[in-house]
Amino acid sequence: MKKISVLIPCHNEEKSLPLLYLELVKLMDSTPNYQWELMFVNDGSTDGTLEQLRQMRQKDQRVNFVDLSRNFGKEAAMLAGFDYVTGDCMVIIDADLQDPPDLIPEMIKWWEQGYEDVYAKRKTRGRESWLRKRLSLLFYRLLQSSSRFDVLQNVGDFRLLDRSCINALRQMRESERYTKGMYSWIGFKKKEVVFDRGDRVAGTSSWSFRQLFSLAIDGITSFTSLPLRISTVVGFIVSMLAFIYMIYIFIKALIWGDPVQGYPSLVILLLFLGGIQLLSLGIIGEYIGRIYNETKNRPDYIVRNFNDEKLL
Ligand code: UDP
Ligand code: MG
Image 1 (cartoon, protein in one colour):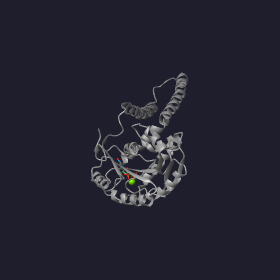
Image 2 (cartoon, rainbow, N blue to C red):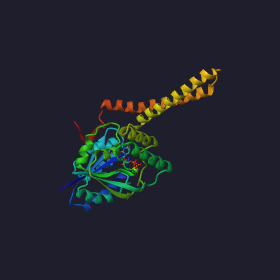
Image 3 (spheres, rainbow, N blue to C red):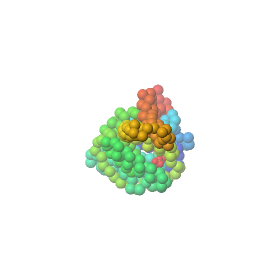
Image 4 (cartoon, rainbow, N blue to C red):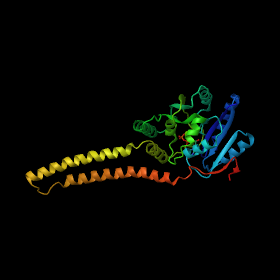
């Protein structure tokens, strides 16, 4: 019998968990020809999430949970899940029921037909602020046009991955993780299913605007070095212009002499160049910071215990 794992990263989801569990039980009962494993990753919740996971496991041995030592963020929590799931395939799903479990049977159907990465594409994005929607569209367009492979728009982590994909993802241990890009990077046979993304059933989104912004920067820096290229090109163009201007000034001084003038143009040039230099330095800094973090080679997450068994 094939085994299907469901990976659920949870951060302060005590209100959503019971509802999600009910849905998942319904799903598991309606597909008895598979063995199921629920893998919850408690990503440093400060509410009753862990307590609920314990209670669920007492009643239902299909429930497993990895308890992380603090909040490491969804990307790291998912990696922890990748390391712990044992299924022949794995479905990643949010705890807040924004990803409908009803879609899973369809995903399994495609998986059985040989697709290795069945991803869910949202037709609608659920309730979200106008600015957030705009910014996220802009971000996808930027990433799309600057990297060599497709990072799909309106596709999140909700997907079914074959064991071969899980193993591939487990090899990617970088600490600035942008998992959405990794799904594309690893390749494999992909299939799209569409769904309507609803609103959270309970609780609030744990992603602050700042976190999303930093995820976006991670996405760009970890999958493309285009910003570095841009600063090179801009630097080149500016020096070409400066060179032309230099010749102009030189000839002007030769012909008409130099009655000391040109304060405005001097200041403008100074500010302009200073700005570009700072910007380029900042871009380089972003990448160096990441190199620095990566060279520390720290684990991406720390597990306190698994199913309440202390780890050695
Ligand atoms: N999550 C997590 N760690 C975090 C933030 C979020 O494990 O630091 C989980 C969260 O519990 C949920 C999923 O990631 O299951 C998606 O989070 P959320 O609903 O806040 O994100 P959104 O739907 O707004 O993208
Ligand atoms: Mg959500």
